[in-house]
Image (tube, rainbow, N blue to C red):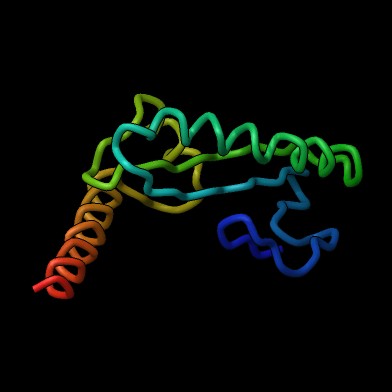
Length: 117
């Protein structure tokens, strides 16, 4: 299943997005909200996917985990981000997440200021 914002497309089939050997399923959601909403957005993401996680556990007998990766628009992060990033498979750094968020924010600001000029 592919989720973009609040819209999900496709269906989950047994075997998609899970590890058959360990019987686990990981739901990863990335967001870059305004800085003052970082903590609230993390709680919102956990709550949003809790019912889906429960359904996956019941339907397929898999252990499901939700990993919210939230970075503020200017690079602000929550205290729990390090733990969440370590749980994501592969090698990732918080510095690169912050840099990407800041570059994206500066790109948007430049576009807005050019339109008004």
